Image (cartoon, one colour):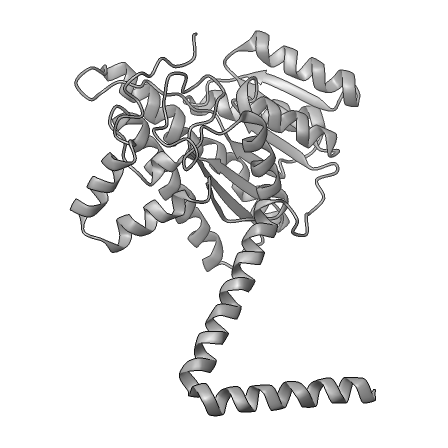
Length: 326
């Protein structure tokens, strides 16, 4: 006890002398530095998945576009955590392979798959009903992951291509959420995850339709979040906004400065997304440095932002785009 009292007395004397020497301005600077370090420590812990995580054991997780890429990897990871998995996709063969893989590892009823066109509201309605009937459980976590990219500039794109991008990447979120949100609100339990993109914050040449769709997805998530906050609902939302991921979807896209803006590995992206869901994070920008581009866009004149985008090669990142082979 005497040691503790001695330590506190020395600390009090130190801060008294510091205040006499530096004044209020010095104390404010130290306080700001301390808060900054605490914030940085929190961000590091969050980024590495070191925050407290919720359990998803026996939770019914519904993933659109779950037959390949990060959708497939999320399904596999959540299954390992004990969740009941439902995946939908238009590729029925790949869908059956993922379901078979999960069931071989975690039991014959661990996963269920339905061929579904998420741009068709009736197809979504039918698929969700089949998944609920199979698992005998309402959906607890909805992950809107399905997405397409044309990689075409405005005058090169087609009417059908533009409509397809908007319907799958944005409008489909309305169909899925409307089917599950009522039950989530009534049960005071649920989580809606939007897989958007940094292209939902930053426009890129050659991605006019994709950026429009992802801006829409980000806006959809934000509006939904505020609707839920207004009613003090327990339903959570998470919006994921990654840079290019090496799933093949953006094959050919380049980063001028890969050390600053790396093409994300599928494994890293999936790990970060799963941790974000388990930690109930609200918005995730990855890599984290891309938050600076959003800050520059919000604070500085447009000419400075545009020049910065050109300097870092964002405008030319899609010049050699190939995309995933169908």
